[in-house]
Image (cartoon, rainbow, N blue to C red; front, side, top):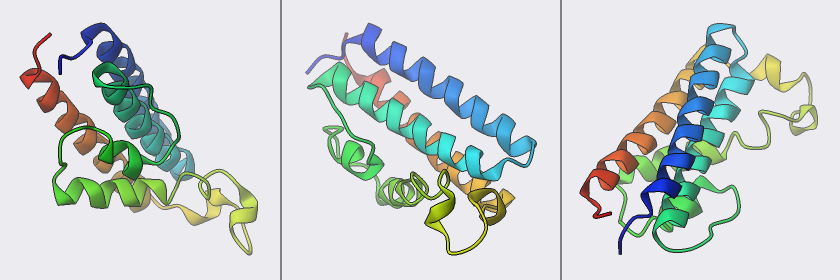
Length: 134
């Protein structure tokens, strides 16, 4: 299956932009938003990959989108996808916790881990894209 490069690049650029924003948020101690944006970056990159290869992908589960990539991902990326899916809702909504707000619950380590997971997923997709024919 050939890759629709224009579609892939459009989504890839947006994913990178979102990940840079996540890194900026982490640098300003907004660890909740950094974690959420890392999820979003992986979500957008995977949607772009699937859409550029096979079909119109929807939803926000990084695990599901990774499964739809058409190539078996390494186990560590599945673990990353699971970790990223865990921040999708609670990083944004105060009622996800009994007390406090997301800004009180996320740490620098959480944000770094989420950003690293998103970077690994984007890197894997970049490697796949280099092997695809136009």
